[in-house]
Structure formats: structure tokens, C-alpha cells
Length: 91
Length: 186
Image 1 (tube, rainbow over the protein chains, first blue to last red):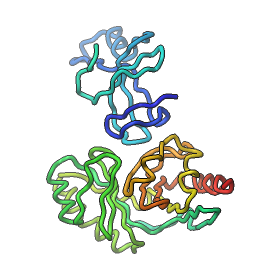
Image 2: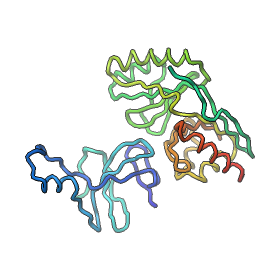
Image 3: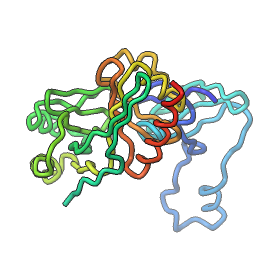
Image 4: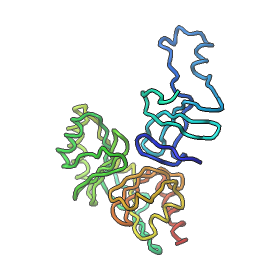
């Protein structure tokens, strides 16, 4: 259990949120021109690193807004939280 | 046409806790981002939807609770009849939804409102809720959307140890049972 600072509502318990996987995956502009492998790569393949990762989260039981988070998957330390459309504050 | 068929229609009293279902109450969901939307709502209801998170605004007739940056819930302070609901909904719908500056949805039957009063109110909620009520309970008009016993709720702090809790109709009976069972421990 850990606390997440929702950029809209403030600090809340993790149980109010749902994780949405890796962030900043760009949808191909012309999906019809892709091969099945390339489409599957976009659709399913995600990094699963041990360390700092950029993720999407949703405050599902609060304001229901999506936002991004920089989280260390090895110790759940949250380095930054930022709104959708904003650039990650740390690389 | 709406029919107010209350799922609970009851009130219970325990040691320093009183739980009542308040109905029928007008509840409207307001959504909009444009400045015109705020102006229209302010003009029609004499209340501006709050822009600060977890807050509410109100007058003697209505309260508007912040739900998200572009979403609010409006509810009446007094029990009201069906005609009033339809009149208000229609008025706002014509002003806001039809002119495409926002949306108005009647959610009077979607949410069930419980009033919980008494010294042990926050102790009761804390037994099944991950939300930290320390600041909330001392802030009149504060709003929180959270989970109580894994059920989504909206909590509006009306006054000292007096709050209104909104729960979805289909979960209302389950939450009611849980609140009653948990209140017996105090």
C-alpha cells in the first residue's frame, strides 16, 4: 500500500487508483499500413523494467481522470506525477 | 418520467450515530469546460460551480459539489417534488445542453443520499475507508470521492459531524447493511 498524489484531488490511497500500463506509447498514424508484427508490437508489447518507469494511472474511485507517473517499480517510490499531455519532468 | 422508488427508506440510530436516507432530492450531474457554462449555471442558480478540488458551493436551496475539473453534482437542500425536478432539469437542459456549452443529466434516481450525523460518524467511516478524514472533518463544505467498504461514494461535509453521503442506487442496500452492522460496535 502506498499513497499517490493525484494531480487533481491530492494525496489518496493507492486502492482508489488503477494502473494503466506504460505511458507515452504513440499510436501509429496509419495502422492499416503496418504489418501484423508491428501492430502487435504497438498493441501488446510493454517494457517491464525493474527501476524507474513512466506509467499511466487513473484515479478510478475519485475524479476518474488519467494522469502520468514516474515510479520506481523496485520500491514503489513515486518520483513525479504529471498531467496527460505534459512532458515527463525527469528522464 | 422518474419515479422515486427509494431502495432503503429507513432511518437508524446507534450510539452517537444517526443514519437516515434523505429522499426525494433533486440531483443533477453538470459537465462543462467553457466559461459560458460557468456563467450560465451561475445565472440560473445563483451559485458558481467551485473550481477548487474537493470543495463545494451552495446557497439556501442548492449545493454544487466538485467531482472533477469539468464535472459537478448539484443537489437540493430540501426534499422536493417531481415537478420541481423536471422544471429545473428542463430549464438547465435548455440553457446548457441545447446550446452545446455543457451537459445536464438528471441523476436523482442514480444516487441515493444518506445523512450520517453524530460524534462517531468519522470513526464509523474510517473502519472501512482509505481516506484520511483528519482535515476533511474540520472543513465545512469539503467534498471527497472515495471508497467505503469497497463501494464508490461521494461525501459532502455539511457541518460538524454531519455529512451527506451519496452512493449508487444499486450499491445502496449493501452499504446500508454495512453501515448498520459497523455502527453496532460503537
